[in-house]
Length: 216
Image (tube, rainbow, N blue to C red; front, side, top):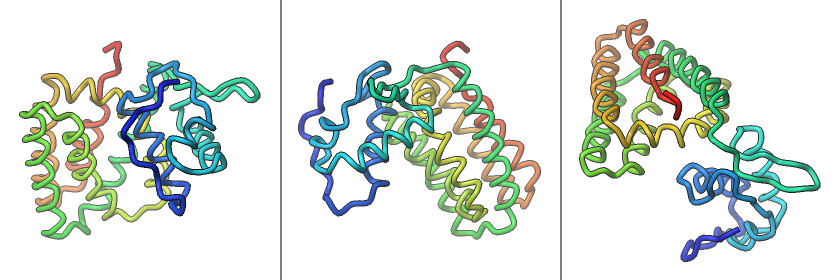
């Protein structure tokens, strides 16, 4: 398994969540490719931590569908399975629909401005062809109503299934679909500002339900 060079080691005091996020992001951004074998000792050396948090992170990644763990044999990065993508897409779309419906009444002027600013960053990133920045801006925008909803169960579900979609989202943000995302963001913000919880929730659902899989 080739280990990326030039990546700073994690502080040994960091929580298990940091190890999980580092490995998750390496899978999402393609550093570790589908089918690639992941060895906990090599990963621990790369991150500068013990094998225990790496093993725990790999278990969480398996639950999220990002790796396939074969006890006593190997752990490999999962393929872009179409059924898994469609299932995750349905769940994530439904969770964002609920989040927006619950959040609209609680959104402040500052929250709405944060969404507008995130969409501006999203547009700029798409124009530059910076997919990483576009994904971060998209996360920030949709994260505002998720935070305002303050529903821990909903957040836990999104944390589990959103990473499965991230590899597929790169396809959308690398295509003409990105322009449609900007327009949907603007519509979502406008409806949230108007206090139309049902309309905004429908747009949020459609934004994620329209995410293509590689077969579409």
